Image (cartoon, rainbow, N blue to C red; front, top):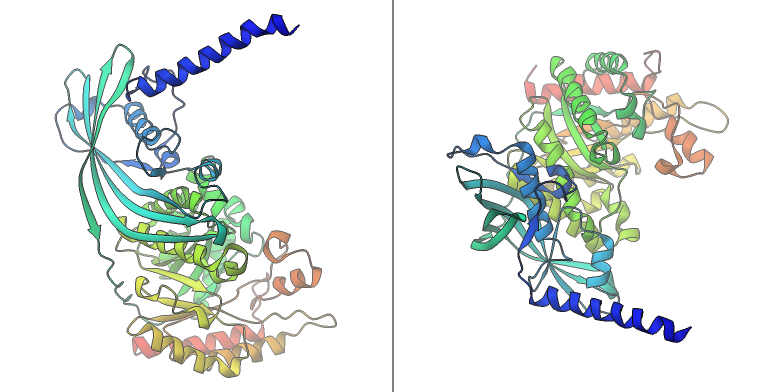
Length: 493
């Protein structure tokens, strides 16, 4: 039996050795036989964006052609095939690749991350046999320390590369890649957001909270709720973009369309919106930075310049993930997302909604407004706000979550809710923005939101200041009275 298997094993081993030799000695060129051997993915998947230029023969390039070139560039930058000394991650870098290239036993590993890569054609031959492209990329050098579960990031650069493609009998071939320029990006402090006093509510419809909101999207109820919010004297809402719905290619377009519809409904009522991203996502690993940057760019592109947009909250209560994900990793991720957003859309105001005033100084120089939440004893709120103002300097300070649940084992505590909210609001006169949690009670809350404990779910369901029938609870009247005085401070009404 062993003699019968010897020759096939020898042949298999020789074949493997020849394959390795051919790989090492062969041409570094990559070829694609047109689109036949390529699984076409859209630009959101590979993390590259195409920018057309007015050059001869540009109209001859189809969308399939553009997708092909972006896919080829993404493959060239893939960590499994790159010939660079440093591994290069772009788009959807796999966890497996990072584990193979930076094992737990390693002291440290260095990488280069590419974000916000834009491709523009510079030369298109008349018969489409020669294509030259220029890539403009945000480059981030990163060092991982596996033993400490820690990320360090170095300087950032704008890197320019020229890429030349030729159409041969084997199909398209990437012939050359040349780095033409690397510019250091000097981080500048973010300018303060110029805004009047804003007062509003954190908002979900009663029938579609958290991960149900964008799937169900009860537009009629949303419009009715915004009428109630307007009647309460508020001029803003804070909403949450559920990550999985907006990052999923099958639901992404639907989510972006609904988000713009919501902004339109708000604009009709002169209500401004804080859009909070990465909701229900707490994975800050370096391997996800590329895809998270793509998700961020996709949403920002869809809402940039909308008159109802007040600011973008990059992450809700990121500091609550310090223990589970590591503080350094969370802050490194947040820093990368801030840089990615500002690199392409510098006109969009940014904030991060920290869960506690003690964290309000984190990354404050890079944010346009400082925001925190406060569910502590109301008696110390004015002092906490004063300390955050000191940290913020000339930047506005928003308290984007306050409120109190009515739930109790024995009876509804609406009066206690109103008194607690009044105690909070009376200490927030010097704030630039105040947002109450929340308009309605919720029918259902998933265990992925507050855990499995039934009393936690019951408590979270009962923060609403208005009943589902539109009847105002005592807390709503306290809120309306506050708005009549707070907003008039700025407007002079």
